[in-house]
Length: 155
Image (cartoon, rainbow, N blue to C red; front, side, top):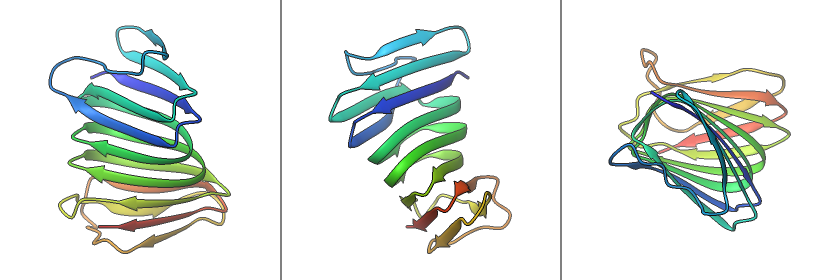
């Protein structure tokens, strides 16, 4: 499985979806560096960023700011969302653990009802308001890191 490091500047809408083969789909103005195990993508100055990656990934690291994020149809070992400001995160048909890293920010996350997870808070002065059903035995972890931030999780 390949790792993806995706940095997005100034996009208000970000969508990441699975491709049905080993294809990568990115905006034409993107910068990309790739090797055998890692792909680094830099996207800037687009209003909407639509990204297609293979349905199974290792580690996905995403850097976004004040954006709405949709992730659909992807399995990953871990997805790390490094955000600033306010994030709205919609997850659909996913598998894997998610870290949300914020400093003085807030995020609202909608998870599918079939997504089995447990929530965990790290960092300083962070709070999670979990309105979705947690499963203490789940392998998937949704973790809030950073400081002075909030995460709302719901179905």
